[in-house]
Image 1 (cartoon, one colour):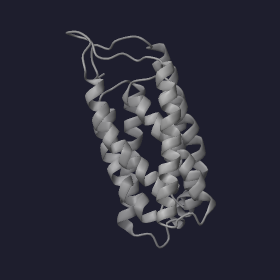
Image 2 (cartoon, helix red, strand yellow):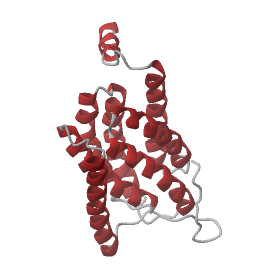
Image 3 (cartoon, helix red, strand yellow):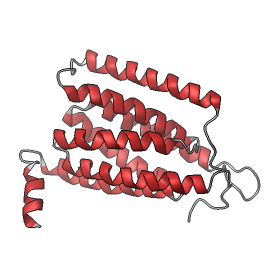
Length: 212
C-alpha cells in the first residue's frame, strides 16, 4: 500500500505543498457536494461553493482555463441553485424533481454551443491551444455547463451530463498530474449513476425538507 501512496505523491514532485493541501480539501468538499445532491439535500450548495472556490485557484495555476471557468460558473450557479431549491410550492413543500421540457432541451443545446465557443475564444486569447488536453477541456466544460444549469433547475437529466463529463475528465486529470482530482471524478461517476437512480425514483415528488 505504501508503494501506491509513494507513486501518487511522486506525481506531485515540484508542486507547492499548499496546492496539494488545497486540492485534497477541494476533493473532500466536492465529494460531499455530489453526495448531498444525490440525497436532494440543500447542503449540496455550500459544500459545492467551497470546493469550486478552491478549484478556481488550482486550475488557474495548472493552466486548465476551461475547467477554471466551469468552476467559477459552478460557484455562481450554486448561489442561484440555493435560491431555486428553497422555493416553496406550498406551505410545507419545496420545488420537486422534474424532467427536462422540450424548451429546456433546446436551451441546453444552445448553452452547450455557447460554452464551446466561449471557452475556445478564451483559449485562443491566452494562446493555450498548444496541447490536446485543451480541446478535451473545452468539450467537458460545455458538458458540465449544461449539467450544472439543469441541476440548479432540479432536472433529472442533469445526472446524464455529469456522468459523461466525469468519465472524460478522469483520464484528463490523471494525464495532467492531478491524481487526487482524477480519483475524485472516478468516484463522482459512480455517485452520479446512483444519483440518477435516486432522483428518478423521486421524480415529481415535492420534498418536505431539504436537510435529510
